[in-house]
Length: 339
Ligand code: TYM
Image (tube, rainbow, N blue to C red; front, side, top):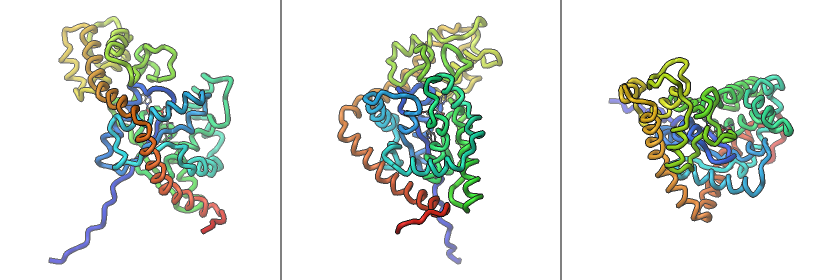
């Protein structure tokens, strides 16, 4: 029998980033981080700490420095493996800023004006509506397109930015010839939109002034149980997933994401029981999920030299990949390239 050569199937690629603007919340974890860990088996992955994005709102330098290191350590603590995946800090790879400029010149004012994150953040930081905040999606497009990923695993709130990245990539490819893979957002159903525990109309956010509205990945068990006990529900006292029950739906979604139980199974588990038992079970499940991560984070933060070594390794590997795409984009646009 003839031995037919099989085409080599390359693994699909995925890239995502997280801003180091405070301790991530359960929303970041369920909407993004946890999925990243699972994706490592199936995809060629790259993940970064988006520290250039962080300065679109004012940061205190000493605090920012600490948060970048902590966020990098957290990526390791949740189970990202720097030997299998590309793990790096955005500012260590200058190509991000360089490509961002080229892409800015291919992004329309009207497109940027429609971004809901820009509208939200400029309302919250009215005294500092800076150019970077406005141009944020062009930098995010650069983060993504430099690594030519097929998928961008994010929570639902980043879908709009991912769509704009696709528009920018398609525009660039159309004008200058095929340069970028046009990636798709990859949004897992469970945990895609974790909501505030105090106002389930809003997403859970680490910048919320009310600390009871979010679970931070560093909260200890007592704090987690207390915050869930205080979570807003309704007066029906029935654990069921239904329209108009945003608070309960949110808690059910969190419980489902952490335990893998279906909504039907959760309804059956708490049939005839009050919200007290339910909230307690959600708190216990979340605390059990976070405890081993918190332990690993503490260990990793003890050894700053080792962390820096991982950062350097990631920066070097990322810079190689990114430089290739940047070169291609610059050349296509007509720049004189020195060999
Ligand atoms: P950031 O740092 O705000 O959030 C990191 C990830 O967490 C997800 N997320 C949530 N998911 C579910 N429920 C929530 N309440 C919730 N809050 C946050 C976000 O969707 C995100 O996936 N612009 C990005 C960072 C970024 C980026 C990139 C992402 C910069 N460059 C390139 C992907 C690719 C951001 O601000 O995410």
